[in-house]
Image (cartoon, rainbow, N blue to C red; front, side, top):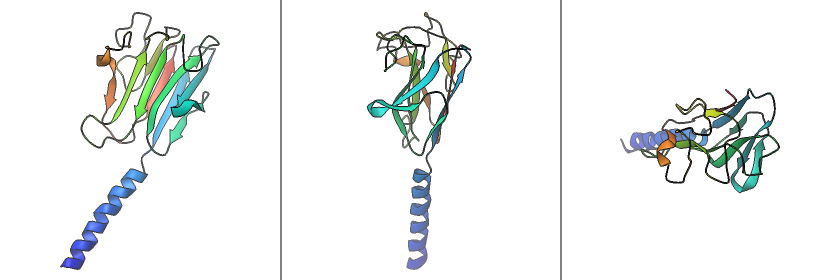
Amino acid sequence: MFASLKAATFAVIAVAAGKALAESHTISFTNNCGYGTPTLIGEGGVVLSTGGAYTASGPIYGAIAYLQTGGCGFNGEGCTMVETTLVNPTTAGSGSSTDITLIPPHAFSVTTGFGLSACIGNNANCNTAFHVSTDTYVQVACQQDNANLAITFCD
């Protein structure tokens, strides 16, 4: 009896460990503008992508994305920016979260939308984008494992 209980415990631990190790998230871009370079910056200012899809074998914390049109700073200053954390939830409310920000020094540059949101496109007055830091209601949460993010420019 003890041996089968011990084996069952190890099986549960192995499945849980395998699930944690299998976490994966992809951020992809569609650029319908006809100009500019989709840019994805990760933690620590690391350039993760300049247009192609980026896949991480684990969580993505605090990444930013924008369409580099020549007028954007390295951190998206002066442009419409998407902020995202993609992580498998461990408790209710602890999963992925994405938003569009127009908080200065960011400003409207091109219509921008993402796949986790009802905000398909936006403009300078978009009510589903951060305009001030207290606009937290515009964050879009995803409570599913291995959430992916599709960002579209000029849709």
